[in-house]
Image (cartoon, rainbow, N blue to C red):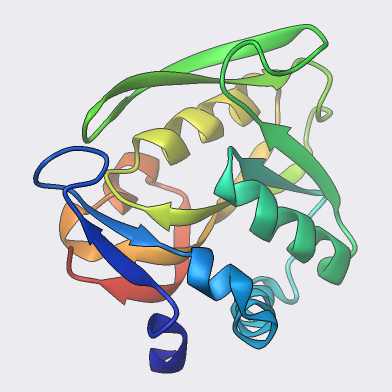
Length: 173
């Protein structure tokens, strides 16, 4: 896993002062590193009965779509307001640097669907919790949340309890 960390660069004071942004674009630019990251995430999810992977805007789309193909699941996308063309439901959440909200199509999943939420990074857990709330509003069963990177000191996993959190790479902050 340490090999993957060399493809993630830290950008200090982005998007605001005091935040260290873990930029995954170098990892995405390297086909072997990206493939390795997707394979590691797939290993975490192997053997689970999953109906849908939920890709959270925007970098979550990248990993969720690759994983959905690899694992043979459906893909549902959760987006920022006003980006989905059909009737949606909405959930708001706090970021470490502000507030935002997410939407999903109201017919994206059916009652009892087993889902795993996918994103690139878990920080404070607000985005993941809001996406999970959306899925539960639709009657979905959240099996857990899978991330490429987890910022462990921020304890974002607490916001999504009792759901499992799986991450490939862990950073202090």
